[in-house]
Structure formats: C-alpha cells, structure tokens
Amino acid sequence: MEPGTTSPEALIASLDDANARLFVRLLGRPDGHDMLYRISGTVHNHVPGDVHGKLFPHGRVLFGVEGYNIRRLIHVPGTDDVHMVSREIVFYTDPKDGTVLTEWTNPLDGHTRPLPPIANDHVQLSYRIRAGALYALFGPAEVPLAGSVAPQRVQRNLVWTLDVPPVYRLSDRYGIDDDFGLANSTYTSWELFDFLVHEDDARAYSGTDADTGTGTMPVTNCWSRVCPYVPAMGIAESETPGNLVYHARAWTLDGFDALEPWLADRVRTHHPLYTSAPDAPGTGPNTTTWTAFHAAELAPRGLTWREWRDTTG
Image (cartoon, rainbow, N blue to C red; front, side):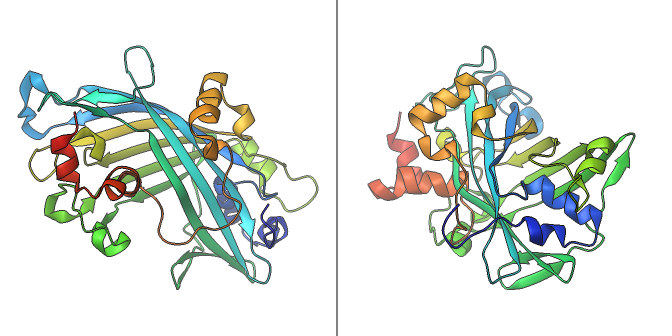
C-alpha cells in the first residue's frame, strides 16, 4: 500500500447500517487487499431498422469479452474518505472459438484495423464515512446514501441495482477536442449493473466484530452496456446508425493470482500494469475506451479520429 494510505477497515466498521457495510464490500475488501471482478460476456450489434442488411446485420454477435477489473479500497489518514481505486482490462475475443482478437475488419468499408483491449487506468469511486453514515463524493459534492444502499430481496439473494446513463462532451470532461464521430459531438451510453449476494453471505459479511467474514465477499454481477461503436472499429455514430450492446457476467475473486492461467499469462506478458490495483487515488476523471484510444493512438501521432480511420487499414 502506498505510504500515506491505510486500510479502511475500522472506518467501514463504524457504519451504523448493515446495508451500507455490505454495499462497501461490493466495492472491495475492507482490509485493503486487492479484489477482482472477473468479466465474461458478449458484444452485440444493434442497428435500428437493420439498415445494413446481411453486410452488418442487427443482432450479430461481434465479439466475446473476457477480462476483469482489479480494485482496492484505501483510506487516506486524516480524512473520512474511502476510495475504490481500480484498473480494468478486457479483451475482445472471437465469438466462435474464444481467441483473443488484435484486429477487426469493418464490413462497411472493408478495412482491417488494430483492435486494442479495453484498458482503463484508472477507474475510481470516492466515499465519505462520517458519524456512522455513508456519503458518495462527486467532486466537491457530498451525497448522502442513506436508504439508497438498501438492496432488493429476490428469493434468497440480496440485489443492488445501479443504472447509469453517461452523457458528456469529451471536450468538456477531458479537454479532448476530437468528437470521434459521436452524434452531436456527445458521448451517450448506458451502464446497467445488478450485484447479487446470497443471504447467507450477506449475513456472514455484514457485521462489525471478529465473527464477520474476512477477505472477498462472494458477489455475482450482471452488466449491460449500450454505447457507440468503439473508436478502433472506425464507425462514426453521426454517420452510421447503430450501437454496441454488451451483455456480461462478473464474479468476485481474491485477486490476480485467482485468474485462469491463460488470462493471467497474457496480462503478465503484454499488460503487466494490470496485475494489481493502483495503490493511491488517481487525479482527474476516470479513463474510458475513448480517452485511452486518444492517448495511445491519436495524440502521439497528431491525428484526429477521422484521419486515423481514413489512413489505417
């Protein structure tokens, strides 16, 4: 753990509401060790009116997705704040045989272009625990979460649901003047999550004493995303109707060493930064596929996204 940061365990135990303590355990381990959400799913083509026909049909499974988010909870002494700091890497795979893809051929223009994985460093959330209550932090804003962290009971599971509709201009949030062909120069998407915890695990991990479960709480996650075609696909949302629909499952693991060998080996070899979570809060807004692509492919070469699209492949 970075000097100047500590485990948030005592701070989390001070929460009065058992639901709040469980909610924080969805985010990470109170002891400050790494926790991982292993992600597995598919990416589908959504085309209103099926206007491309057989060339690029609505409903086609374009990719599999295999990867993870690795995270850690940290506390900065002298504050009441708990930060969930993470990195995530997710590979696009061939939906037929599971092979990791490093390039993709756009059927609309016939060009084959590199297809990088989702590789976001950093992704973080910040919370404040004060007088036994939990607050979410959004910049300077402090939002009380009393009541909003109560799960729904579905049979023998507790379910936390989070529906997020991101909408922003890259120029406003990240200082990136390239619009990436986005409609109205604005990024819009949906991020839809359900987190499921069996009632027995919830009972075991919700306490504050020595009998409370330690380590990683078993959590199953369902994740759906609706978003524009990613930059590497070379398809402008403002010119071509359609979106990607991600549908995936995720589940908690104790850390990088709990991954399947094929995935761990690939990350160690090609993306070693993602073998552990960050050890301190990052600065600035979270990394996304669009900002990572801009940093890796466009800014170093002085290209706009359209120039990259028209000269690559």
